[in-house]
Length: 169
Image 1 (tube, rainbow, N blue to C red):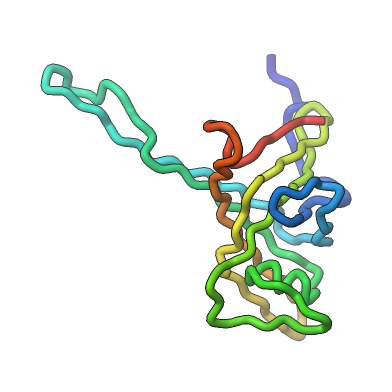
Image 2: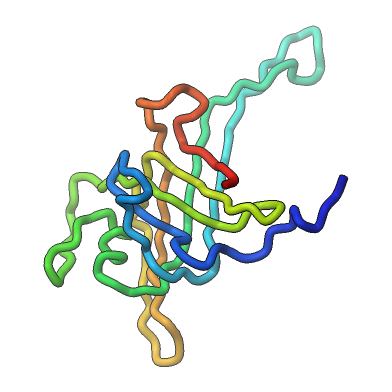
């Protein structure tokens, strides 16, 4: 039966997005502060159509590729947040970057409102910043740090559970 309590509006008040070292628990993750524009979680799947001569339509679809991307804009323009979006470490009062050989993987935690008044918790095991980021400094608005992450398959987890989990608590 339909219920208006299953309509979710807004995000959580505190700790919406947290980032920790790869494999870290949420209690060891850093709260990234205020965000603006919400959090986007985009899942995409590519499938191969199995076709046979005796049937006009595909008789099966086999997944050949799967991807997950997370995007959000950080309102707190700290050096730590800039370093996170770039996929590099933050030094004492500075961020050095350019010509890197790899990117840091993180575990991301996203806490939002869930259906029926629950709190919804997303845990993404292994995330790599895409390095696609930007900051615009302007007279009449906040500087936002755009962050985008690819969720990688964590092969230490069981097949079918390698991106992460969603739970209502």
